[in-house]
Length: 103
Image 1 (cartoon, helix red, strand yellow):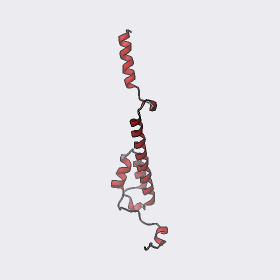
Image 2 (cartoon, rainbow, N blue to C red):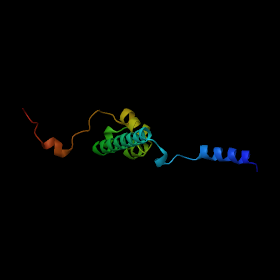
Image 3 (cartoon, rainbow, N blue to C red):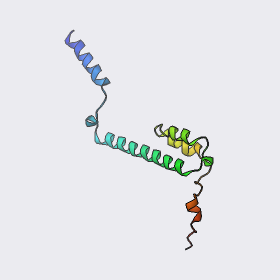
Image 4 (tube, rainbow, N blue to C red):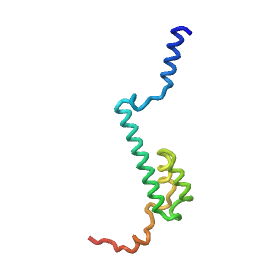
């Protein structure tokens, strides 16, 4: 193998190699962290909303929507767009017993 072929193979290998966290610059790291925060927030909000709703207020089964929410970004957005039948969860027994606050 000649030096030229060896250099070519080395460049090809370096291009294919995945970047590690330490090789990323600050804006790239910030974007990755921000994306992760948004993803986790959407996932948590969807899971909390699913658990607070009655089964009749969810289109399809709750288990199905919990599994759909595991799909990054798109899953929770799909749940909020298509998985709910009403805009607010129905009040529980505890919430129904409380009197409204009058200011």
